[in-house]
Image 1 (cartoon, rainbow, N blue to C red):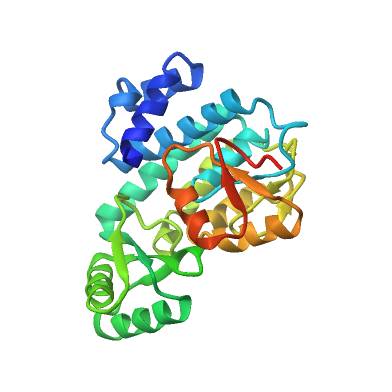
Image 2 (tube, rainbow, N blue to C red; image 1 turned 90 degrees about the vertical axis):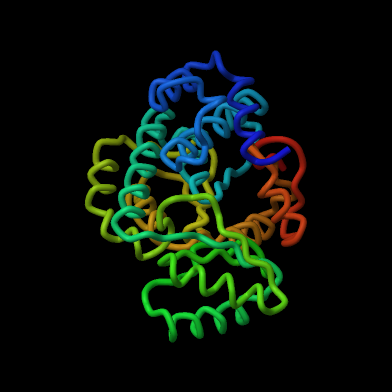
Amino acid sequence: MSDVEALGRQLGRYRDHPLVAALAERVGGDPATANFADTRVALPSTYVAGLVAAWDTVGPPEGRVPMVIGHSLGEVTAMAYTGALDPYDGLRLICGVGDLGDEQYWRRPSALVAIVGLDGITVEWHRRNVLAVTGGVLEPSGYNDPRQTVLCGDEAAVDAMVARVRAGVGAARRLPIRGGYHSSLMVEALPSFRALLARLRFRPPRVPLLSTVDGCVRTDAAGLPELLSRWLVLPVRWHEATLTAARLGVRTLWNAGPGDILRRIGRRGGAVEFVEPAGVLS
């Protein structure tokens, strides 16, 4: 099953949940059959699917999970699950993120690409060689494991990177996301994003929240708006965060989904074992 099919199926399973109903109002129809090729639809749909699955499968986090961690937009999902952010505020925020990314794309076309099978130094070597020819922006936007790096940048630079990697021994896969997330391309959107954040109320998370922005554990609300401002622009440090979780005694990760991407990354990275189905459980 593809990740898109998994997303639709997960939303269909929870069609009667109030948060899914709120999502339906946002996307203008049944979320289970929505156009996930539109990032403005895919982002809030993924947020809602993961959050509702965590509630249904695990229940409230207190006494059930020692720590919660989120990958990319999962940072916001994790905040909502731990109670640091109201779930409906989280939905409004992610809808805003989708709009800002879409605006960025049409203002300056961008793309994301996952480079698989090359270590970080080799990726950096290719990246610098590409930029010497194309100029523009091409930056790491995610460190998923020691041999998978996600880059974000101008479309011409991404296309050149894809061609260079595929001509060698690595694999390169463009991601179906419209918007220069986790890169300097989103700096221009920061004033609008901070205006969205200013309307939200943040609370102390009910269980520790491990951020993939800086690898630090949060136990209170101080600094969460600034953390999310940085989250919009800085790369996702997933592998580092899972190493931190392991050092703190976490033995297994449960993925709220949808899809199987994090489990696939986990099988390669190996910092913490993934098991079914949601949250960080032990």
